[in-house]
Length: 102
Image (cartoon, rainbow, N blue to C red; front, side, top):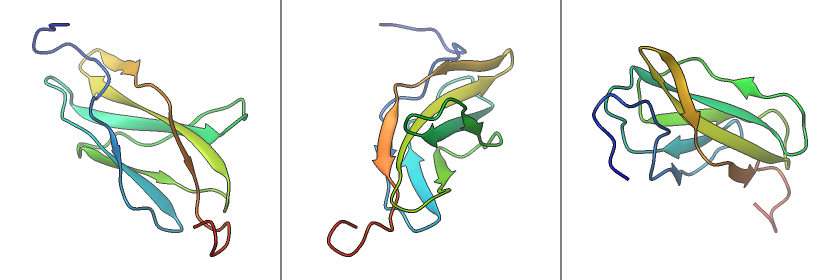
């Protein structure tokens, strides 16, 4: 699908980076017209989302709240008219499950 410059769509080509105990990084391609990006996240099954501050970088870090917990995250572009569409859900399990799992 073709979109013109300035459309506030979700970032694409999202890649999970190497996590540490406190954060889980996601990198993605820049979106033309985006002023920054936000990530929202929650433990799988939780009703409420937590949301990061707006960042200009194309790598965002999800803060890990609990060890060995499955999480869901979504990333959106922040444009002149507000936050655009959210990406598809990204899933990961935080570290701390033990040496046979981490």
